[in-house]
Length: 372
Image (cartoon, rainbow, N blue to C red; front, side, top):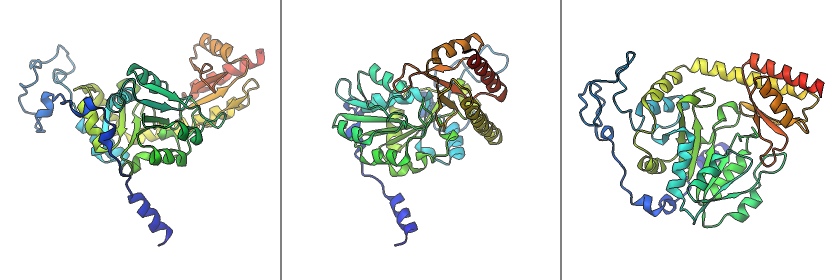
């Protein structure tokens, strides 16, 4: 057998997984709420809708008369557009009111309060822990390897036990900006007997291949993406889960009926149709990231600019981080002080702005550096 055929055969292999054994008992037996629009399955928009206790006369608005109707609870048109843009099967997509709602649903479905635990790898996105605490689920922390910001597979293997239900991995990682090694992620997905949540919020800024294209292979994997970062739609709050149809069934069962409003759905569809502008902005951000990295490295007070595969840079500024943060605030520049996070002492996180914004920031840091 040649190597190419061997690789193809490996891709076809699907891990056997009893998903129902991970779902909480109360969730297994709950009957989902069916909204009026879910019971009506026709696409005829000219129907007379007298099913959902809406105001048939419309809203007191001069610019639109459609917001008196509830939004599509399953966001069919938006999912179709995302499926087309990302080349992911429609049936593998779930949409949430931001990724935060999806994280909340994952805890509700798969973890039992005061019994199970999740595993996270600080420094990382804070909502993995906060959501777990809200649900009364213990959160185990295994710190990333210092300076490398990579997973410590030996430690992870030692702490996993039958009560380990969810593992959260962020790649590219927030706040460090780096890719987590693909082979390490794959190792965890294949060996862990629980749910692996891979947060790829910043994947469009990275040259790393998304795991979403392999979702058929891993029934225990949930890939999170978003329209908030590279697509510039943070104000709409649209998070994306790419996962198995079984998991999506549980998410639809537990989510609130109308979790994404009509305005957000309409605007997101329009944005996703404008791929040329999307790629233009993406290219601009990547170009500005390089400019920022090169410029910051030349400033004397900055000890390190960490490699980034995201739309931000983590910058280490010994002795000056807090003062510089306040100095920039006084100059009307807002960055994020990450000094209190483990392995991020004396670090600021700087989002990539427009060239004008970035140039202004660099100029102010240089002036501060000369004064100090």
